[in-house]
Length: 592
Image (tube, rainbow, N blue to C red; front, top):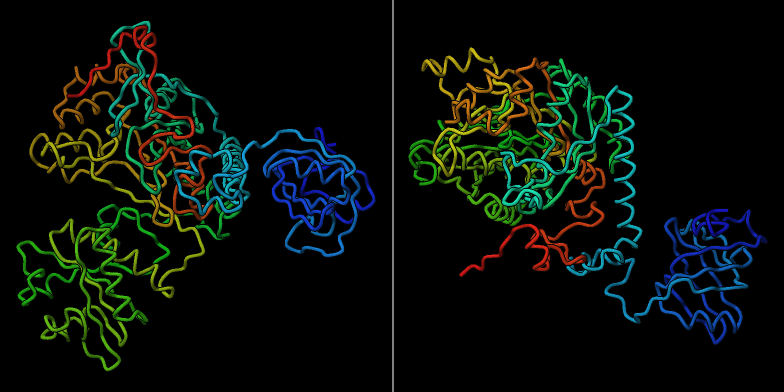
């Protein structure tokens, strides 16, 4: 017996014919045939079973309830005369002797058809998420998520990691996004912050003598939504290792993730160890992105020297850079190419250009007339063959690189012969810049994680201080894990030396007292002898999104917020009573 039933709605087979059974579930559909005959589809978590009503008493009960009511059916299993090969239980049906109403649906009209909920408006889906989740296709993603999380836990435990939970109420810390703040009732005027990541706590665990830590960690960031980023909260496979190097972290991830991706993914092929390692600057120049999709075999080439002094204005702007992507055996029509270029311009913000080498080996189409005087040089430099498309990005370096990256991705999707789509291709992006010039401040700022070890340690920072090295040329022992063009995680070898930490922060105008004030626990802990340590935290939501083959991360989250970080099902965020505000010493000030 399975709870209050003998079988689930996906369990009965021909071998059960003649048995008396009890099944329960939602009344998914009713098809009446005459006065006292109807076919009822009963659905539970596991599947569906057809129930055939053949008596007036049973028909009266069925007619008295709306679809999506929950019922219990007791009856006899028999072989179906007209079998349904698309249904797991399609060889049998149940003839009821007793039907009991367990939970009545009080609405004649549903917000959407359950099995077609994914076609409904997203607002309706999120408001009635409990109905949306009844759709087996939607539920499948949540089950996948559960299985993946279970597999990750098992794999990490087998690798000697201890699962340790870290605090949710903590101190505000500069992690790169806005904090969610929680007022402290017992400390008027002070606030807790929900952790953007367990960064400091996991490093403190390393200083505490734990060798290998992990958790499926909830993280909270007040940031805007994207297709691959959920506002509010997300989860990551957070891990840290003591006495570890970058290679140690890579070895664990390269052993843990590929089998899980191959087993649970839409595709059953995943990169084997070692993953390809690409320096950041090389990734930007070769792929136009620091998260390249390596399933695409197209690369970016710099042809600035070959396009100087043309009559085409975008190639002749001051400091203009021209990037080219060669697509061999290109079957795209001019109409296809123009549409693709328009889509690239919308996404990248800059207009791309193109020309082709036709079947006669002549440059034609697009901007061909502006470069025809140097056709031979372009053909030789780019090794062009007939039916090659040359897609171009031009402008200031950052603009040209960005446009080329978007071009490469769209061309790969548009040209099947240049993309091995049905696989998971991992890579590491390494050697990130330690510092950058902030867009708003115009001053030197940390490029990624401020707790990362600068490559070369103290000696490198002293060379900057002496003016021997440009701070923008310093790299950090940081790395990103990328899969199919999606950044799954950032990680780093941590800066565990308080003297190096202070020197690194001095570069961004923060002195020793600032470090002690902002990171008191970490700074003091490091002063008591800290081991070298390193870690990473692949995003669970993004992993499951890739495995499920979904384009939106909301499809794999049980109860997601909308794009404005609102939970329209629970009506959150919401106003609270004045009494609650008074207890927290908070006053709401209206904006004029």
